[in-house]
Length: 58
Image (cartoon, rainbow, N blue to C red):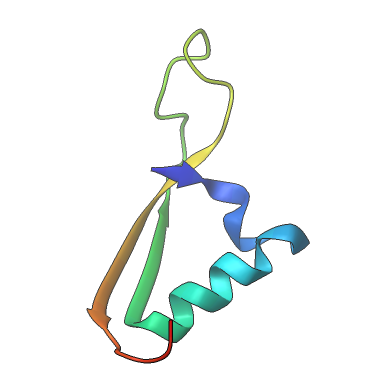
């Protein structure tokens, strides 16, 4: 699980570039409802699926 804002905020651009450069397929599944009860976490989260590791410079 990761913050759903990963796809929209400017400061996360390097993380998105890293994922798209390293994997053939990248999907982020978002939920219509909060996954965790409000008492436990007040963040919208998504599930990151990455497949097909592409070798290249670290």
